[in-house]
Picture (cartoon, rainbow, N blue to C red):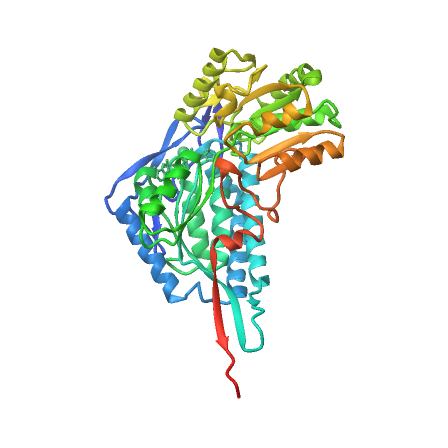
Length: 499
Ligand code: NAP
Ligand code: MG
C-alpha cells in the first residue's frame, strides 16, 4: 500500500480487498434486501465502496444464529481455559494484522495512522486481559449452614447485542466483545454506519481464531433500522451500547417496550479539566489539556472539553495553549507524523463549525482557530479551536461538541471551581492539577464522575473500570467488573438430607 500526495490531496491506498458484506452465522453475505450504503473516507471525501445495509430481517437471522450457537454449547459450554486459548489466538491475529487494520480505521474515519495503530494495540491488550481473566474467576458457596450446600455461580446471559459509535471503531466493540465472548455469550454487533470496515475484518479474525459459527455476527446498517431492531428484539438478552446520551435513552425505551433486556450505556461527556494556580508544572498541564481536546480531533467521549482555569494563571495557560495547539494543526491522516486528522464525515464537520459560530454568538472570545482546514484535500478537517472567557451557562460549555473545540472558563476559589465542574448533566471524566494533596482529594471526593485524574488527564488501564455518572451512562466497561455485565447469578440450593 502506498500513498502519494498531490498537493493537499491524498491518493487513497487500495481498499478493494476489504470486507463489505455482513457476517452472519459464520459466512459473509449480502443484506437480505440486497441494499447497500456508501462507505466514505473523510480523508479525501471519496467513496471507498458500498457496504451491505442490514435491517430487521438480517437482525432476525443473526439473532437466530446467535441463539442456536448459544444453545448448542459450542462456545458457551467450553471450559473457560479453552475459550481463553481461542481469545489469546485472536489477540495474536489482530496483532499480526496491525498495519492493515490501522489502515482500515484511518481510511474509514480519518484518525491519524499512528493513533489507529495505537487503537489496534489497545484492542489486542483488551482481548488478552479478558482471555487471561476468565479462568481465574470463582463462584461462591453460600453461608447457609450445615443442612444445605448452596452454590452461587455466574452464567452467560445468552445473546448480547452490541451497538457502537465510530470514534474508536475497533476499540469500542472490543471493550464489550472481549468480556462478552470470554464469559461464553453469543453476540450480534452493529457498528456505526460511518465506520463499519474494521468490525467486518474483526469478524473474519474471530472466525480464524476458532470461535464457532454464529457466536459473533457483525451487521453493518443504520441505527434507526438495524440498531432499533436489535434494541427491540424479543430474543436478545442484553444490549451494551456506546454512543450519544440521546440514543442511549432510546435503548432504555426499546427495552421497556420489548422484553426488559438489560441495557448498559456508555454515553457522552462534557468533562471538566481543572488547572489550579498551584499546578505542579503548568507546561505539562498545557500539553495534557491540548491532547485532551485535540486528540482524535476531539471525537472522544472523555475529551477534556471544558478547561477550568484559576483566574491568576488563566492568561498564561491560554497563551501557552495557543503555542501548543500549533502542533495539532490537521494533516494527512496517512502521514505517520500527523497528530490530528479529519472529522469522521461532513455532517460532523458542519456540526462542529456550527457550534463554533454559536460560541462566538454567545460572546465567548475566539482565541484560536474556528475554521475548516485542508479544504483542497476534499476531506473534512477543522482547525484546533480555543474559546477563552466563556461562562458555564453557554451552549458550548453544556453540550457535547465532539470536535477539536476547547471551552475555557475562568474561576476564582476552589469551591467555585468544583461547583462549575459539577454543573453539567454529564459525569464521565474529570482532571485536576494541583500540588496540594488535600485539595486534590477534596476535589476527587466531590466530583460526580466515573473517573477523576490527578495531575494527568484521561489516563486509564484495562484493569480499571470506565464509565459515567449521570447522563454519561449506566454501567462500566473494562476491568474484572465488566465480567458482571455479561453474566447473571444462579443459586443452586442442595438440601442435605438427614441420615
Ligand atoms: P450515536 O449517534 O449515538 O450512535 C451510536 C450507535 O447507535 C451507532 O451505531 C448508531 O448507528 C446507533 N444508533 C443511532 N440512532 C439509533 C436509533 N434510533 N436506534 C438504535 N441505534 C441507533 O453516537 P455517535 O455519533 O456514533 O458517537 C458519538 C457519541 O458516542 C458521543 O456522544 C460520544 O460521547 C459517545 N461515546 C461514548 C463513549 C463512552 O465510553 N462513554 C465512548 C465513545 C463514544 P448509526 O451509525 O447508523 O447512526
Ligand atoms: Mg467512513
